[in-house]
Length: 217
Image (cartoon, rainbow, N blue to C red; front, side):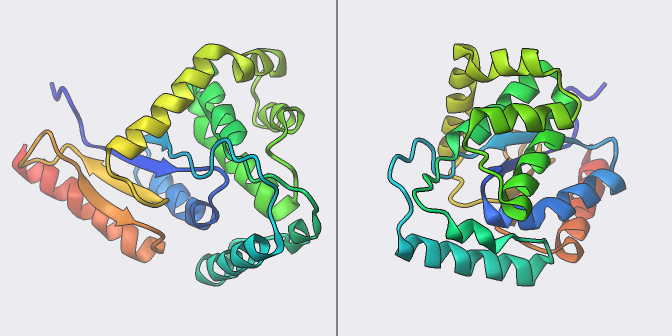
C-alpha cells in the first residue's frame, strides 16, 4: 500500500487572472488523469486590500487581462474597468473556496472556477458575500450551510493557514503547480509549472512525473 501516492498541489487564487487563464489546463488534467488527486492551496493574491483601485492600477490590470486573454483564449468582460471605487480584496473569494472545501470537498474546484468566471467573464463583484453565496448555490452547495461556513471563524483561520502554506512553500506567483512526492526525495515536490503554461506544456510534464514515479516505486 502506497502511504503517499503521487498527487498535485495547485497554488492559485480565484481572483488571479493568470489562474483564470490556467483553468482549462486544470480541467484537462482532471479529464486526462481522473484518479490523480489535486490539492488546492489558496494563495492569497491581495487579501485584506482596503484602498479602491485608481486609474493607474486599472490600466495595469487591464494589460494583464489582455495578455491572459491572448495566451489562453479565456473570456473577459472589460466593463469591469468602468467601476468606480472597487476594492480588489481577494480574501472573501478565497474564504468562499475554503468554505466549500469544508462543506463538500468535491465541489471545491467547481466553486473556485465559478467565482473566477463570475468575476472575469460576467463582471460580478465577488468581493461581496451575497454574490458568493449565490455562486455557491449555483454549483450545488446548500446556501444556508455555506453562508454559515463563509463567516465561521474556523473558515477564516483555515484561509489564513492556506495563505501561510503558500508563503512558507516559497511560492512567488500564481498559478503554481507542483507534483509530489519526488520519487528520489520523498520530502520534496517537483515543479510542473511556475506561472501560466498551455496544456501542451503542462500535460507532458505531468505524464513524465507519473511515469518516473511509477518506475522508481
